Length: 221
Ligand code: SAH
Image (cartoon, rainbow, N blue to C red; front, side, top):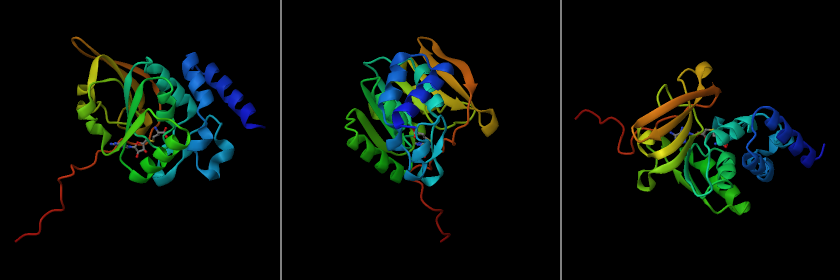
């Protein structure tokens, strides 16, 4: 089967499973997922499945990318924060649908590789940062949209909800236990936060790094 036939088959499967937003489908159609998948898995790049990338991480399943992107209700003029750059695929999809994407990844080799892909594909509206995304990106806050692509605990990180603009939307897998994760949509209104549980999912964990100042325990004098 040609890449084009595989791509059409994937888009039809996503539509059947509830990705109906034509802008989201258009982004999935035009971003070459094969450019984000390791050589060993090229034959599966257009399958609706998550695949391993380096350092024990994964590129998400296209259906999950489609549904989470759709759940964000993106506008063309918006500024979006992504936590968990990974392969860079989700960030590339977002880059087609909003003004600017800011993406944070804690594993430097993955980030370097993602940045190389963005350059090769001439995607110029993604800015990345190496660090702990649970702290958000305070210098650039507030964000109109926040997408977290690793699973947090039962509650969203407070730094992230604090950096969500009024009227803003955050989509994040929550739940703690791996088998009980759900994608949750959080909105900031004038009066506080609202929360909707959307659907079950399985993501790699959102890990919090120790503060940069933390040094090894001192030896007793
Ligand atoms: N969005 C990615 C999939 C990411 S997998 C894609 O499209 O390919 C989740 C990623 O989150 C992993 O790369 C992991 O290293 C990263 N991650 C986990 N905890 C993090 C944290 N606290 N800050 C930033 N990145 C984190």
